[in-house]
Structure formats: structure tokens, C-alpha cells
Image 1 (tube, rainbow, N blue to C red):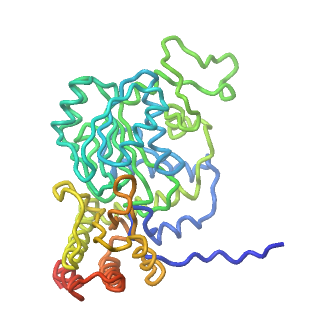
Image 2: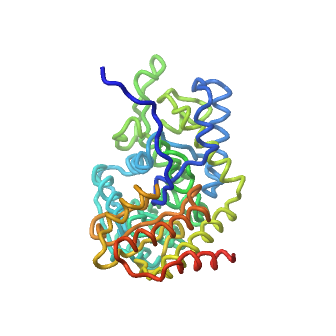
Image 3: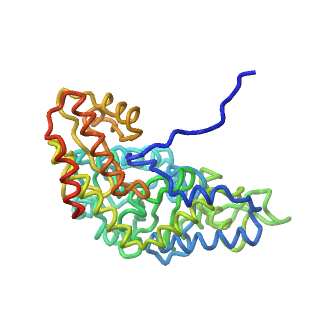
Length: 410
């Protein structure tokens, strides 16, 4: 029999746009004893998690809970539950994950309309509002922070345009929640999807979502209860119901009953992941949302100052740059993958490449959650400088770290 070694992953400094280093208190929480999913102690934790999610999403929505699965499970749950076959769905695309929204909406049977802009830019809210008025969609699906390009789409004013035509406004905030402001109620967003493995510094495996009464009304028109859960003589089909939600596991109409006092036995909650999410949210709220947003901006500024002092050029329109992701153009003649490999092998630091038309053209450096610290920024700049010098790139040695220290006011 083949012998297997004890599991002992190598510690890394993870400076990618996700996943990032997990908050140590979150990892500790994941080691706690398992409770039964209907144990009152556990359902109290579920209720506390919902309350903290409302604060994170800046909402008074009744429904704010995690979908068990990676971030994509949350996106699919919202879209498959809100999009009926034949619904018109408008998707503004400015990077890879706009295309993902189209892919999922197509599988829901949607009539898809897209508008596109060059990767590295975003839309003005007025452009999107004009498209909403022109196309009159049932659903607008939009990415808030596009990690493939490092750009962030302004959302103010778009919700009002959606209300004019009675469209549901759905936002993918996987990469921004917990790192920048996501004002669900103020921006009139009907459904928001977050992620754990980025600015929340919780391992991947849970997808926090929230949605309002406008979205819930559509869910209830499609709601069915599984045959095996019905009382004798209870009919699961009711007159006037809309098209069946195509997924059972990702059916929000049933998931919300699981998270309600009814505790519909839909699935078995991922106990340790709920512990992790609850602790991650507690840490975020302990720091304070505004303070956390400010911390991300401070370390972004230091990283940018160091990269520019090194002679590197940033990618994309600076006016719409994500505060938590910095995209760097790979210098001419430099093997970008060789640089990334050397950073990982020699310094234990991971940065990311990109996708599609940007593959091989840029590096992406994340400053997210627990990974977003002065220590990590300075170590990354120092290591990148050394690796670039070893690859023959001429740069003013030492200037990057001094620029970052100046940004920190040291």
C-alpha cells in the first residue's frame, strides 16, 4: 500500500485576487465540534450569521444567508431562481465574469442582450441606464468588481433605471464585499452575491447572498415543495405558478424556508463552513466596515507607489480601478510566468496572471482581507524587485520599498 505523508501545506503569502490567506481566527473556528443542523445552539448561530450579513450588505432585507458552495453556487442560485425561460436578461460585459453571467443566464433559457466595453474600462451608469430603457429587460445582471481586469463598475443610479422598467437588479459582488462599499439598499439592488475567499478571508465554500421583497415575489411564484416533504394530502402544485426553478439544490424558494423559522429540511448545512463564515463576519464587523474599507485603500496606495517607482506600468483606466486588485503590465521581453514561478518558489509569494485577451499581458496582485497588510505589501515589492532584476529588467533598486514606506508615512 502506498504510504501517504501527514498533511502539511506550505505556508504562503497569497497576493492574488482570490483566494487569499485565511484569517487565523476563522481557521480556529473551523476546528470546533460539529453540532446537529437543527440543534437550537446551531440554529442560533444561523440567525446570528443572517444578522451579520445584513450589516455587511448594508441592507434591511429579511433574506441574507449563505449558499453552501463556492461563489459560483451563489451566482447560479440567484440567477436560476430569478430567471425564467424566455426572460430578457441584460448583461453589461467588461471582463471575464460578465461572460460568466451570460453563460449561466443562457443555461436558464434567457433571451440575452449584452453591451460590451474594452477590457480595462467600465461603463458610465448613464450608458447602462440607456440600455435598460432601450431593451426593457426582466433582469439586469452586472459584475461590481471585475478581477480579470482590476476594474470596478459604479452602481449608483442604475437601480433607479431598473425600477423604471420593473427589472430586477442583480449584482455579483464576490470580489468586493468586505473590501469596498456595497450599499445594497441605497443603490436599489434587488439581489447581491458575495464571496468568502476574497475580502472576507474565509476559505472558499460558502456564498453569502441577500435579496429583497421584489426578488422574493418572483421566487414565490415559482415555489414548489419536494414531494417527500409534503404532508399527506398536501398539493405541491398551485394555480398560477410560474416556471419550475430548474435546480433543486440552488432553489432559493426552498433555501429561504431552510433559513426561516420553518427550517425546511432542504439539505444538511455545512457546519464548519458556517462557523468559518460567522467568525469571518464577526472579525469584519469588529474592525468596522468604514475602517476596513480605509485599510484596503491605504495598502493599495502603498503597493501602487512601489510598483510605479519600480518602473512598472499599471493596466487599465485608473478612474475605475478596484481598490483591492492591482493589474500590472508585464514588461516587454520578460517571461511573466517565469517571474510568478520564481516568486512562489524562492519567496513563497503568489501573484496571479489573467485570462482571455489579457493572458500573458498582465499580472494581478490582490490586497484583500487578511492578506492586505503592510508586511505583505513590502515583502511582495521587495521580492518582485529581486526577481525582475534576476530576469534582466533594469530598475532603480530600492526605490520601490522607499516609495511604499513614503506612502505609509514612515
